[in-house]
Image (cartoon, rainbow, N blue to C red; front, top):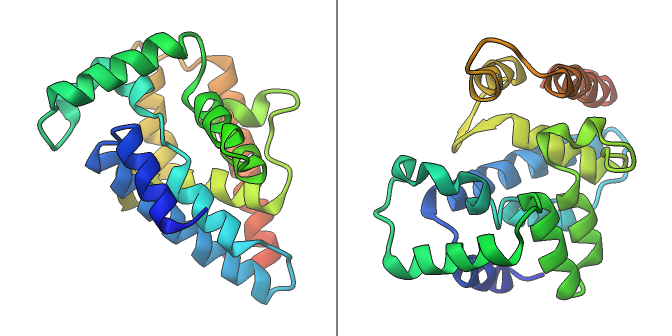
Amino acid sequence: MTDQEIKILWEEFHVPKNIQKHMEKVSEIAVRLGKKLIDRGVPVDLKLLRQAGLVHDLTKIIACFDNLNSFEDSVKVCDLEAWNKLKERYDGMTDPEITALVLNQRSENKLADIVRKHHFTSVVEPGNEPKTWEEKVLYYADKLVMHDKEVTLKQRLRDLDKRYSADGNVPDNIKEAKKRAAQIEEEIEGKLNQTV
């Protein structure tokens, strides 16, 4: 998938600027980590990893739909109409599932497989956990970006606690996903022989 095709997808799905910036930052970090892994002899497809970073939250707006006031840009009527159609069309699906479906429809199957497994709790969903290096690196890079800023995994996990447990009780699947995210970090750091 070319950069131009990615930009066309962003336009087609009315991806807000803040989500575009997030995807750009995730892509940047994923490629940086991928290059370091390659330097240590780990086979990683950097082109695929870069593209996955740039489209992983293509349909994230569906998950954010009830919180549009947090967007830095004013929301246009045409965006709202497009997002409403998306929400209706893909009702009951998660944004990674929707993005993967969109990519599969465009014959971007490898890209779809990577993107499908980046959701925070995918690591605890049997059959959906990241297995390839590209899947693990995208998953991890996404956890190192809060909005469009690079943060540590610990900082991001604290933020996720606030989001997923307003009452102070963290659901079991989130607790388990946090452990698995830390294991992925350890696995990557182990291959790199350094902390990230």
